[in-house]
Amino acid sequence: MPQNAESNRDDSLSHWHCLRTQIKREHIAASFLRQVDGIDVFCPRINILKKTRAGKKRFIEALFPGYIFAEFNYAEQRRLVMHTQGVTSIVENGSRRVVPEDVIAELKASLGDELIEAPDPSLEVGAKIEFVSGSLKGLNGKVLARLTSGDRVKVLLDFLGRDIEVTTDPSEIMLDPEGT
Image (cartoon, rainbow, N blue to C red; front, side, top):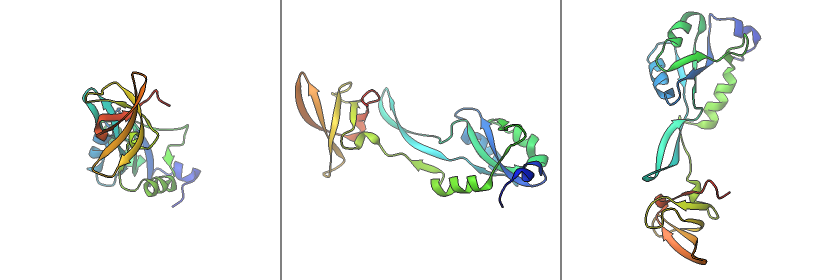
């Protein structure tokens, strides 16, 4: 059903809304809202790699930090939604608060299931990387190749003025944020 200006004023029907949530609490708000009859929730998440003190680790985060989408009847469920743990507000632009259904459908179609696997950019040939663990921690290099024998990567290092090729485990390297 296409949304138009008239449907924004019709609060007796269920429509999609964008909700502002507490940062890093999107999944909590979505979980509580899913328990309520008549409320549909869309909270896409992404599985990404981040550099930590212990090396690189995968984290699951909201694709849209601080926001989720929920379909509900504004007139009947606004107060319930607003008082749900993790929800801070309903996003409005003047009197417009409804997210068109085709926008949500397109997001769902393009994102597939709700957990998106982000590839490891430090494994691409030519990527400038930094060693985040192991005996080479702190050194920078460039990925030369992904090796088929096991899960290894060949890296070119500039070490003491000489180019040295080393092979390493992908878990020991991370894309160098300053290497672009």
